Length: 266
Picture (cartoon, rainbow, N blue to C red):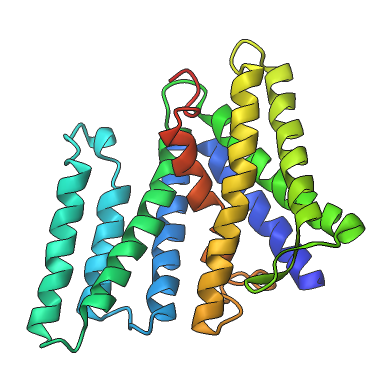
C-alpha cells in the first residue's frame, strides 16, 4: 500500500504539471503513455514488439497521435488511414504464410484504435482553442471522482455484485456511488465557471465520465481475465501498467468528443 501511495503521489504530480504546461509537454506525455500502452497490448496478445505486425501497429498509433495541425499539414482522412493500416497488417498474414493469422491482424488493428485514438482524444481536448485546460481537468476530475466514489461507497455499502465473473470486487452500490460523486464534481465546475459550463453540459460530462469510465475498467478487466493476467504491466509500482491506469481515460475522452460535450465552446 505504501508503494502504491508513493507511486500515485509522484505520478499524479508529474501528470498534473505536464497537463498544466500543455503543448509539447502534454503531447510528449500522451505519446509516451500510448506507446507503452500499445507495447503492453502486444505483449498481452503474445507478440514481440519487433514483430512486423507490432511495428505496423506502433506506426499506426504514431499516425493517429501525430499533431498534424501543429505543423500546418492537412490531416489525412481517418478512414483512409485506418484502411491502409488494415491493408498492411493483412499483407503480413500473406507474407508470413499465415504464421500470423487474420485473428492476430484483427487484434493489432483493434489495439491501434483502442490505444491510439483514446490518447489522441485527450490531446484534442487539451489542445482546444478555448478552455482546453479547464475541459481537461473537468473530464479527469469527473473520472477520478467516479473511481473514488465507487471505491468508498463499495467499501461502505457494497452488497450486490456488479459483474462477479469479470470483476468480483465491484458492486452495484459502489458503481452508483461513483456516478453520484462524478455528477457532483462536474456540477461544481459549472458553479465555479457558469459562463463556460452549463449545468446541463456538466451533468452530461459527469454521467459519461462515470458510466463510460466504469465500462472502460470492466473492458480491461474482462480482457485481462481472458489472457490470465493480473496487470498489463509493471511500469507503475503498485499500480500495474499504463493500460491498468488509463483504461477509463481512453474510453471516456472519445465519448465526450463524439457527444460534442467537449471541447468546451465547441
